[in-house]
Image (cartoon, rainbow, N blue to C red; front, top):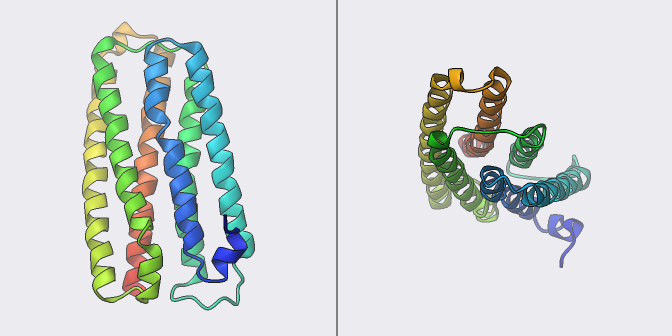
Length: 224
């Protein structure tokens, strides 16, 4: 495998794809994590949580390599600070996943059965958002070669518009789920209601950071 340094000798955009792939791999563990929580399978919860922590750590390693190997003097078609901000958004996808897993491990949580399908729906919509964001990141090298303009830029802008649409859908699911949660608060412990709300919010941040990554890329194209 080529090292991060070797990739940078050609382009700084290859490692951003690696980081996004690792962050998405981390986010994809949300579905098995919630499945394990709803099945009350403590061994599986721990296994998936450990995997999330490992993947988040690997994402941090890629992020740090990018930062360390990105010379200030490197000529790029985009501002170095903007690229670093885009990298931060990618890494935050893994960070939010790890944060949600940590909250799910704080205490044994129960959720009314009626809410579980919408939770799974929320997770699935978030993962769709991540998939679209990953497809956008896969175009970064081609976009850089095209100097962030022309037909390639138009193609990526269309993908970013699609990303906005799917993220909005996940937001709608999240708001509906929160309303259902608070409608059942009399049947639940207050601390559980607030913890579940915070978990849903943090999981939703996974999709938000994916969208923000796309919007950061939209800005780079506009500045080119």
